[in-house]
Length: 426
Image 1 (cartoon, rainbow, N blue to C red):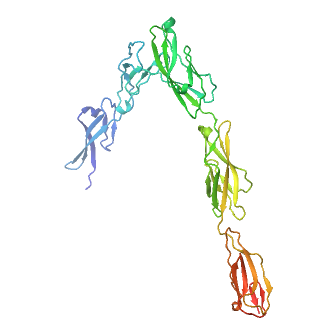
Image 2 (tube, rainbow, N blue to C red):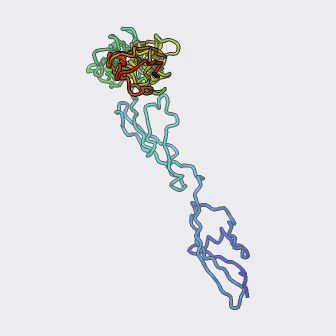
């Protein structure tokens, strides 16, 4: 007999208020909410769930159900005060802690991680900064002023301007400026009364790329008051004033004549003291002819074989290479390259004549010189040796290698013999 479940039920544990938020379908066991949930009011609901059959006696199974309400970011931060007021002295130092503002958020920690910032931080408010994590408001360091100057700027050109104010009157309000540090090699001059900074010596990006000038402002009162110091950063900008310079010239290399196409022969390298595009180099070959068997990678400078080599045709290659930068104006340099093709044994000997024909007297004595044959080999330092491969009936003839040729002599007495090529007959 098969018994079917009759109904499901559930009741809240720990807090009866949970019964007001959920219900269970007694037939299907589906659980659904009956009113909106609020994690900030109650974030966990615990129930006892029962399943009862319709047998006799009835049997009941129980289980526990825990519902955790996930947070959504449905609460905005709220400051502890609607308005904060504080008084400070006018000459407080940089970093002085003014006030700490605090806000709270009713959401879960993942949605309550707050970031503080000043929304109207320009103008008169620019002297303050706030710690984004804890809401601490402090006097802000104005930070360094900066200027960018090309390295070829003319001497006595104004490159920066500093300004300090004094709310006193008369001589007490006259501000005097001076450079107290960072003026390496005395490259800059500051006008005492105006705060204008001029370059007074030539700049060189390749030697010094940045100057950090500390400027002091002092009023004209008695005793004088130092209004403060600040940093002016002068950044020197590169101009294309250096041509590429090749490393270890002239370039020389050797390569076997049987290397495959694409074989790397020699690395051409140049350097450029400039920076950026002014130092990015492109390489090219010069003084070449159509069908030239070498090419160069315009970015890396590697010279590779682009066609088959034959030492017996061309043994030496001399040509030029050029390195050009990408600055304005373009600057370039040239160098020479010499490549020697080395021999491999890739040629067979060849006789100087296709057919040798002669007659000798039948009474010729043994040792008589009959004929000298000559074969040539186009490979370098080749040594040709000779031997009779066939047709030497009864071994009547001998051949010896001497002076690059093959001397054929009579080895045994003979009668009339006709020699044609390498065949001899009586």
